[in-house]
Length: 513
Image 1 (cartoon, rainbow, N blue to C red):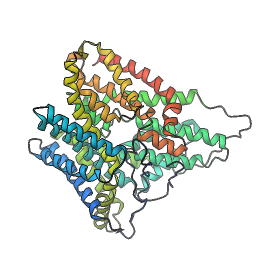
Image 2 (tube, rainbow, N blue to C red):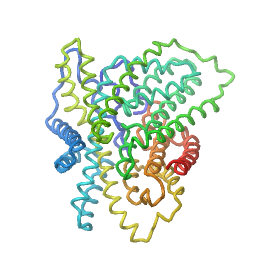
Image 3 (spheres, rainbow, N blue to C red):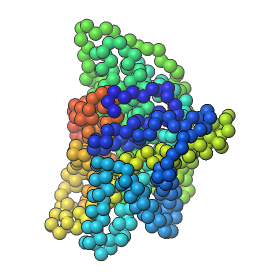
Image 4 (tube, rainbow, N blue to C red):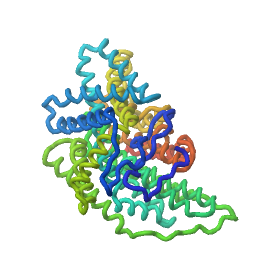
């Protein structure tokens, strides 16, 4: 969607981006091809939708509900029922998706047949793979409820406008920190929202040279702020997948070291932006500084919402013992429903809530078929492929436990962004390689040390891989290719960050891990 610009004033569904061309290898996570505005909040009217879309939407709701129940009652057969729903929804998606997404489904079928033919316990392995796909799909659907609610919030829009209009001296830092805060609510929608607002601010500059420099710096601040959340945010797939595939790794244990990873990622970006500011030509005029709308109080609603989300999740985790990812899966849709009801509190909130729920289930969720196919099949393929690959590596006499621990940890930092250059989704890469890694005890480290290494590499992949949603979104705003963003804009940054993060994971494993 080169050249596409979102109007920051559009409402309520504008915190979405249009789907990329079908020929691209990886779609935008969180993007969709539905019309921009489908629901009119003033009249609560909604357009008709076909039966096939309604079926897909309700199947995804069923997957999400069963995933929540499984988190709270794992001894009951919710996982088996969810496996059936994953097969059904994948079969329906296979009739609608094309290109790489369909290829992912075909590969999943091939791996399933190979597992049946080679593994005596094939049913348990397939159930595990389908369970991974179910949780990923449910997590995606749950997170997008919050983003849907934010799409009609005037307070969120005002907060984004205020951050995007900061003066040059603090603009990069404001957008970096703002992107991290928005990412907790909107996931990849944070880039779409702040990117559109940043472009609206940059386009007010009449001089082309200054405008191009400002555009690049603002968009990179947003991107690098977003990827800084991947290692530590309980709402990120990096944390969810890593804590699933690495036995003993938990978000609570990994929060602080992974938070430091995020600080390193964003701090290096800020330092490089400050040290290597572009030099303007002699003919360039003094940059124009527009009037800033709002005040720092505009950020308060965002902080309040984050505080509510964090507090509720922490209390429930402490009381119940359910893992943090399961708590997030449970409370995020409830908070989103409450937020939507609050926005419509003066205009028949129950009716507005019902209509928004209908929209989300019957229109939004089915429109995410490309993203859900990619994510769910990546999880399934990685899980099944890893289980098939492990005995092959073992029979070949390859013993990774004999490799020095620091080499394995550093390799993880570099391996994920490198595989991203050839189109391998981080979910697929981590799910595939994790089963062949020696256990934490064999490496002589705590599981948290492995988690720190994997999430660090995952974060860097978001900066440099031409096939990730982050680089595609940033490139679409700047009218450049994703490869240009990943390799030219972020190439040196990625190498510097990878070197520093390599030292960090080795230091952590030696001192604390």
